[in-house]
Image (cartoon, rainbow, N blue to C red; front, side, top):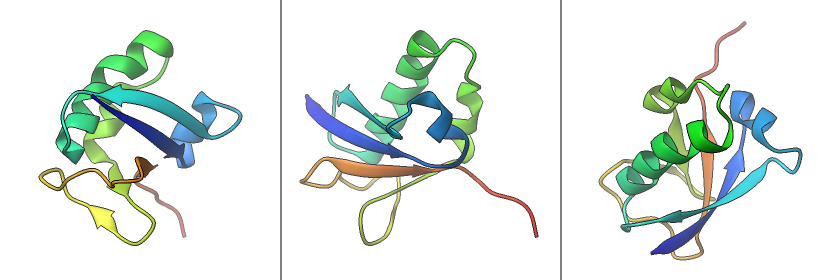
Length: 86
């Protein structure tokens, strides 16, 4: 199991005043984190629209991560929801 510290941006930042949550992920890939969040977010925050995960990106301190890639060794990941505006 991997512990991930998830930095929250955009709509996700409403989940916690510190804009950061920790989750335990079974597996080592970004896809495993996404699957964990699909389960955990509705449990912890029933009003949250978990479907937003399907359109959100994950990033480490340097770049956007794809689902097939490994989670960063330091366990810090940012979740970036889609944005719109002008």
